[in-house]
Length: 223
Image 1 (cartoon, rainbow, N blue to C red):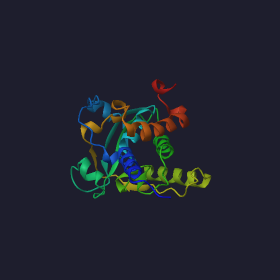
Image 2: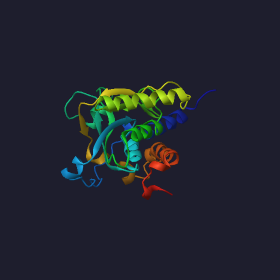
Image 3: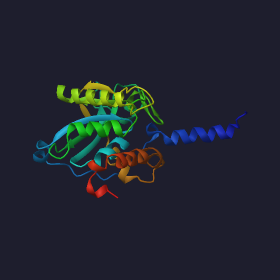
Image 4: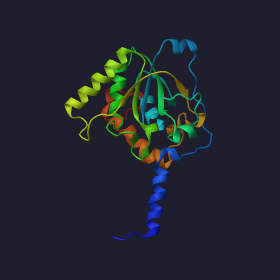
C-alpha cells in the first residue's frame, strides 16, 4: 500500500512529541520542599532507573513511606552531566531516581517489587517510545543485601511467568554516584498534567501502579 508523504510526516511528528528525549521544558517548576539533614539521616535511600524519570518519579512518590523522590542521572562517569548530554545517548548515564524512604513503613523489597511492576523490564535499552541506554531498566544497589533482593525477585518473577514478553533484562549496577537533574525535571508529572507525553506515556504507568499496588499506596492517592 502506498503511504501518502503527508501522512508519514504526521506520524513522525507524533513520535517526536511522544518521546521524553524530545522535551525541552522551560524551567518554571516550583522546587520541591527539601528535607532537613536530620530528616534525611533517619531515612534509607534507593536508586532505580526504569525509563523516563518523569514516570519513575511519579510512581515512587505515591508509595507509602517514601518521603522524597528526586530525578537525576546514575551509572556514568562524567562529572555533572547535563540533560542534553544524557539524552543524546552518548554517555553511560541512565535517567534515574533517588528514593528516600522510611524503612519502618516500606521495605527495600517492596520498593523493588514496585520497580519491576511499574515498567516493562523485558525491554532492552528502551521504555515505550523512549529508545537508548539512557532509558534502560536498572537497579543501582548499594550493598550485597540489596543486590540479593533484586536478583531474588527477578528470579521469582521469571519463574512465575509474570512477564510473558521475555526474560527480564534489568541491569544490576553497583551504586557510585547520583547527580540531580535540572530543576525543571523535578515534579514534572504533577506540574504538567496536560503535557502530551505525561498524558500518553507517564499516566498509564502511574495508573498501572495504582491498580496493582493498592496496599502500598499513600492514602491521599487512593480513589
